[in-house]
Image (cartoon, rainbow, N blue to C red):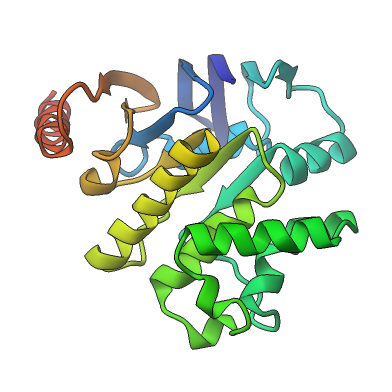
Length: 246
């Protein structure tokens, strides 16, 4: 589904050059829930921005659903972002002047395709994620957890190839975080959704199928979940502690 090969990214400041990503290699399979973790400055957000092509990378290859993303013009990239990729942000990015129903439908509104089928899909997603009762409310009238579940529904309205989630539980309490991660799990199990999540939260990451640990712009280690969630979280915490001491 998503293939990243020998990805390099650097930034220049004056005469100095800073390497942020140093030959990143990984893939995400269809229907897989994968997290990326690492300390501040490890390259997590830059990696996400490269995959979504919001920032150019120096060299390497990124393929999504068989499509090579490097070299696409801005119109083609905009189409990929709106139809092939779903986005979930830490700050929700809901539009205050729209109802939750309308917010979920925003990607269809952009395309000019808000037919009854789309409205029905929005209602089905809201029902699946436990927010059917707030469809006619506005963002200011609902909780942070409900906002994020609405954002997940919005990310799925176009049946994207992959969801890119940037710290989706970063502004939430533990109860709301659990509800949002459960929403991702429902999307995975009921819709075969593919999810790639950047997070600092070992609790959220412990629900994933696999976790990629980044350190200094390179993959330090990848861990797969073979046992229950709590055991996997302990393994993650041990690996993070080990990584920080190297």
